[in-house]
Image (tube, rainbow, N blue to C red):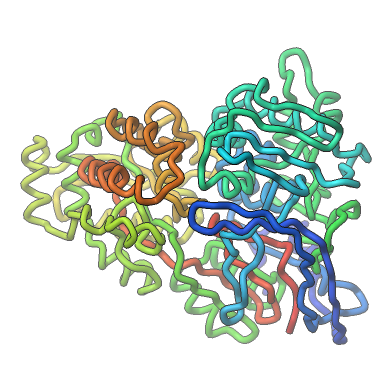
Length: 574
């Protein structure tokens, strides 16, 4: 253990030393919560109310209460805490758990030690119920009663909801501004405050993904009075303050944050619904993956994020550790800056698409825990077969074709460029190293530059890179409109990190934005996918399984479509 802790900050080592679990006894718990559930069936939505009773589980307790503390080793510091700036991975992880979104997916049935979130069923969070007009252009939202912001004691009111929306629109275009824009809300004039707990959204965009969008991690309700008190004339929305501080209400709240060391979350004592099993969640910054693995093996942490495929194999054979590997829509995609040479040249992008050895990534880097990709829509998406999107895929490993295209682009002897990756992330390092060796066969010299998560977000959002890989990329909603609106709308995309533009794809998005019937969307999206594959703005390499290493006694895991770990359902069940 001493070697594993050698490069961990001293305060963390002390914390971990005290975190060893003592002897335990067994007890059971049953919790009940009344929620509003919406079930989406094909093109219609129905609202029902039902009582949800969680199953009785056997949990381990000890006199020190340490079983109620969940310790997670993370690879980097959390980037910041402002929901309006959400996009970086660790920021999103924290936002999902410490801010109430309007709605959240309900867990589905257990399918063998874990469950998938039920993406057709929602429970209210800061809203208690919702009603759509017949034409889906008006939404009535009723706030949950009895909510209090735990750090200030201020009640949660419709005024906070209006302020949250106003701030989002003013500080966009990313984060919640993008979500509200996708729903069709671009002006505060569309929000009617009926009374202290009722809002009406007018002129909404008819869409099958309104509720899935409203569970986005950036959609947390904000304590308007606290943020106003920490705003200035130069910073009227308190952006500088909220990057470092917490002003929300969720099942967990941020108790403390020691940058570069740890963030401590505590269960929210004012939460009116069921209380999570874990009273405390400690996110420990452990940059080296080998140290994260060692801490997991010793039992000093319960979960270790971002382990390499080889480390996951080691973990699965370790006493007291289990590794989940779940088929998922996680995309192993490499971004090319379409606005910077040489990747502004279509022949270069297509050449690398043929040069890439997809099976080498799937079998060599990912150890078979993936399948080769076939374009922007995951092969595990329910729309992939439904819309016949496999017909659009043309790239297979073809060195001769790659060389022909490089020569046509004037790069027959190769070229030099830099790939940016996140530092200390084994997957990023493995993919980059593998591609560097592959491209060298074509005279291409690829250098690799590791950066922090914060710097990665900057270079992507500012298009300040040649090529970039930042781990798996996931469409948080399984819907082709979401995929295209997220990445490929040249005017409004929230994360058009490739700088790609295609006017016909923009037209297709405009034409399908309010279409809720699948048959009417199939041909437009087949065309859009075909055009996108032909333009090759990314290297779509693989669709990887979701993998997570944890102690054997951690139960209740639910895989959400956003790939973000949801603490509320976890327990120590033995």
